[in-house]
Image (tube, rainbow, N blue to C red; front, side):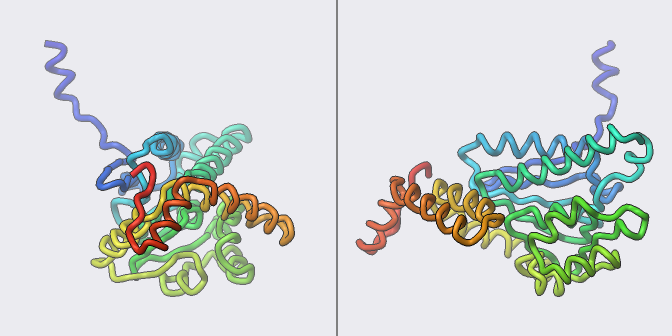
Length: 269
């Protein structure tokens, strides 16, 4: 009898959904009523799923999406105010930073599917993804200055995506920019009509899936590592990277296939 009663108790919807299809893992934030605010639980679940995807050879590309009227409203302010204190705040921002680093450190491309507003840490999440496609209706903002909390952690990703003057204007005014301007700034790759959003991402993922997994992994790591190096150091580093890449089986196969005018057969596919 007790088991019957327990089975009738409704369970909460998962706060993060994972759907795999044809080598693409889609992680969908599912807190629509909270505008997909990055609660401690949501960040923990996203980090857990990204870590699992890192070990899943069947997954070639990751898409981060959202349900509801917003892509992501940033940190959960109610949760923050309900759990005050230096240690709690430090743990929260450290957790967020670790999530963003996990996205960058994942040896697979991550694409943000932005259907609506992305603010504060939500804008940071978009900037931390390798690629971003947005609906024309989407907007982007770092509005922390409006509530007395400068968007310092979102600033790190934002300033590594767009020009300094553009980043400072967003950070100092808190005003939102539309998808067209975000595209001009380089925050997103392109904006499309909302009905074309999924087709645009599908085309992008299909193209990426046709490349060598090991080559993508080597290249993504090298891209982010060389950004903070001075010019001579960067060239020395990527020369070593290209040498290592050239010694892989896929580089040999790719060059041979090109010379023989045939499709390559990548390792691990």
